[in-house]
Length: 285
Image 1 (spheres, rainbow, N blue to C red):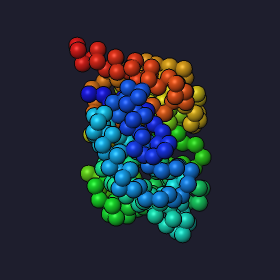
Image 2: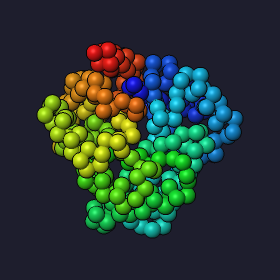
Image 3: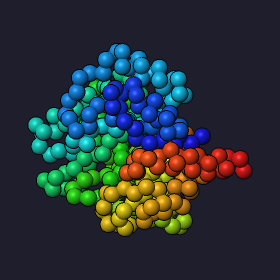
Image 4: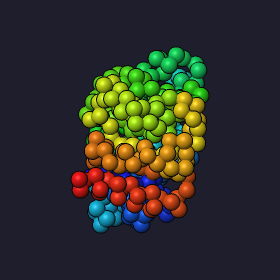
């Protein structure tokens, strides 16, 4: 089954996220668990958590269909130990918020070395931060998202992601989310059939498709290898609708959240319906 959805709003409470997802015909969704532009937030109340679970159950959403995202402010690769400790505390809080909602995954951008250490050293700093956080909070998987390679952000190659996963050393508690726009911007050819197969063969060899915990389905405003992290609606960018139809039809991507982060929310229900139709046609063959 394909868990196709979008990153929905939590306006007026996290309990509204499953309602917003159901309203656009989603079979999965992503969300923040607090205002992502702020370092801290009040704890999720028992009432809100209970309502969130109730609304998920009402609309058939289970934890494996939901891929929450942490705050963009958090940099687990921060070389400064004092600043990194603050980032780590914020990341631990994000994990605890997921646990309070009954969620089992937290998607995050690995972090940036800020050009203060080498990329290899930065990856080890990130891995150490993630391991510390996972040891603090049981039951939630840390899902590394690939990046576009802009600035000093790490995680833009499958090799870097594989190195960080290995350094954490907790395979049952870690995984990867592939953002299609980021992968293309970082130089992975997802726009052609040959490139698509090569990309995921490489991913499987280095990381393992069994460790793919979700995907962000975004078309790209930029060219391959341009390191531009700018999303387009499906079919309106340089990747083209064919990529997303391939993903929808490919059983390798069943049973994980496939999340739209495309910029025009008014198109989400249409984009979801189209991909769901493709997936249904494949299943019927």
